[in-house]
Length: 337
Image 1 (cartoon, helix red, strand yellow):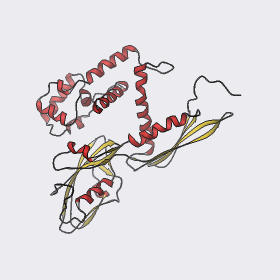
Image 2 (cartoon, helix red, strand yellow):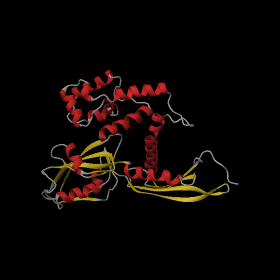
Image 3 (cartoon, one colour):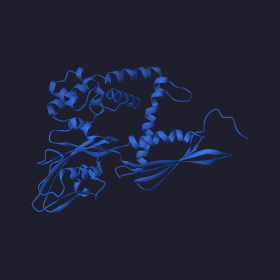
C-alpha cells in the first residue's frame, strides 16, 4: 500500500570502493525519485571546478627573457620547455599556498619530473620529460608553484608575477574524472527509490575520497546562507537572533579596508600588491603566509601583526565556523565585483 508522505526520505547509507587512493567509487542511497540527480549535478560541477590542486604559475630561466627564447646547450627551446613543465603535476607539501622552487642542472642528462622533487614539493608525474641538456650546458631556473582551483590563463597571472618570470597557464584541477550513475533500487515494496554512484579519479595530487568530501563541504557551505539569512526553522538548527547580530557585527569589522588601518605606506603597498584588501584577508592568513608577502620586511610584518592584535584578531585567530563561512563568501563577492 502506497504511503502518504510529509517529508522525503533521507539517504542513510554510503559505500566507498577504492582501487587505490587516486580512484574511488562512492555509492549513496536510498534517494527519493528525482533527488539523486538534484544532488549529483552540483556535486559533479564542484568536483571539476572547485577542487583545490597545485600547479606551476610562473617560471624564471637564467639567461632567458621571453618564452620564445632558447637556452644554450638545451635540446628544447623555451616554448617546448614550458609546455613540458605545464604537464608536470606538483603537490605542495604542508599548509603553504605558494612556494618558489629553485633548480640547477649541468652536464649531459635528461631532466624528468622526479628531478624536481624537494622538501617543499612532491612531483606526482615523476616520469614525464622536461628537458635534455648536453655536456657543457648549465640550466638554472625557478618555478612558482601555487594552490588554486580550476584553470587560470597566463594573461590573468601576468600582473601577479615578479619581473623576469614568465607567467604560465595554470591547470589546478586534480580531478581527471567525475561521472555518476543513478540506479533504481527496492526499498520495502517500492522499486522506485534511487542509488547514486559516483566514480572519481584524480591525477595523484589528492585522494579521490578527499576531493569528494571537500566538494560536499563546499556545497553545504554554499547552501548554508539560506539558514542564516532566511531563518529557515522547519527542523533545521539556526543561530538565535542575538548570535546572528553578533556575527553580523564581527563580519562588518572584518570587512574594514586595509586603507583604514593606518598602516605605513610600505606595509599598505605590499598588502595592496598582494591583493590583500580587507582585515578579513589578513585574519585568514597564517603567519607564514603573511611573512611570504613579497617585499614585506620584518619591520612591516611586526607593524601588521601589532595592528591585527590591536583590532582583536592576532595572527592565527580561529574564527567560529559560521563567521568563517560568512567571511569567505563575502570576500569572494567583493573581489568578483
